[in-house]
Length: 443
Image 1: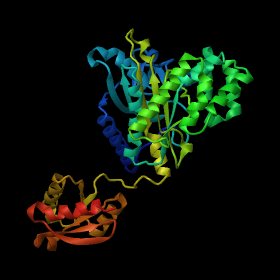
Image 2 (image 1 turned 45 degrees about the horizontal axis):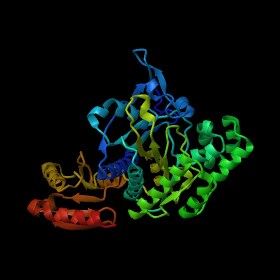
Image 3 (image 1 turned 135 degrees about the horizontal axis):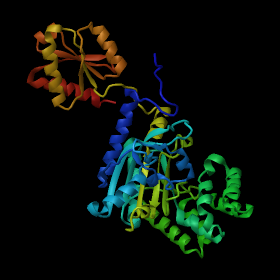
């Protein structure tokens, strides 16, 4: 016998886990579409040359890479942004610009499995390609904000920074040629702490202890958005790139404020750097107030140079990715995931063998009214079937035996409250439908 098991870092999704996952995906689709983003898909496998060297040394190491049956060097995509760059370069003539897309699909990284992180996981990305306009950066912040609220969160914060600000400071510290190594180390500040990050900057970037200290002091700037902006002004003064980044931060905050996003929801955090090498401007990370330790649940930023590897046409972009599985793990930990294993709220027990066609007709009437219905497939005792209904998480049961059907009615039972009422089956079961909708609408 082969022992049934999953690989380390991978997981099965039972219905009670998959259903809230699909609800998150549906919420993401609603928000993305409301801003005009269109769906696309790309292959899970790409040529290794498409993927390598586009994220970081770490993502290259984590890539699932192998020779396929045609002896081609291929890899499983580690995110959805690099395949997007290839996709945009290949199809830009047909798509036109600006092009707004969302892509919800599985990615793979051979990293150490930990709480809320798996080697196979799903990303929910949205991006705007083909424009450098700050309007698209502003819209990205607004989409993240609306996405979190659509999912059901009120306690969250989008942390904002601009790589140009960081690059400007590095220019002034004579570390511009080591910006990748410095920013990659800085991105680990929350996880590794000040001392280890300073050590990495010195070892990997060749920074002096004084230079590392100055970079960390920049990252430790704090206060309100206005106070942080004021503190950053002298730090970037004299650097054209740094001053441009600061100006973009200011304009973005003013625009999102005009759209109703408060400083409590969108806050400058100079410590975030986004470790991936392709970010060039605005960057975002989103944290839950009640569970900040789980990490960012929606991250992204502007990447002006990614597609230049595939085309001579300039295709700047900006976007973000919802960490679906990490967010779902957070929701489970916070008790925000309803424990049900059926997508249908209505259950019809089959306990009168002669009445099967009547049950099926009633189920069809309820489905025509937009209600999800499951009819039990075997004629068993009612008690056994109601135990099944409780275990699956149905909210309503429609009970109709010989007596009820002879009288042209059925019993509508609220399984959450344990209450039942008799309702007429006349007029296409209108009274039954009305009663079910009232039950489902109640908190």
